Image (cartoon, rainbow, N blue to C red; front, top):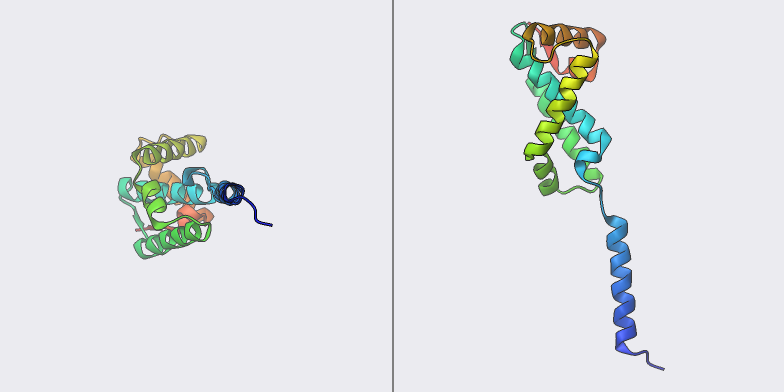
Length: 137
């Protein structure tokens, strides 16, 4: 006995919709493990740019960013999705605001180069991810 084509087509369409819904990924900015690492890179970069006594570990930073990209790829994000996240003005502004909040949480002023130096030295001494991306001159 043959089933009507409409029933088969409907079943196939329903299956495809369920697979698509199941594979939908959250926006990359909401993936904490990726977004937090981008915050750490951003803070290290800002500290190195504002503080004359601290420089960025550029090779380590590039390696770290490649590992973040690799992790995002492993989570199912395409290079285009990663680049869109990375280049987004809204994401840059959001991460900057998170960075400023982090600096303030340490009792420091994010607009003060001296305070960013203080934070950088503390992060280096602590051996944090941020500190590992920095080097005291």
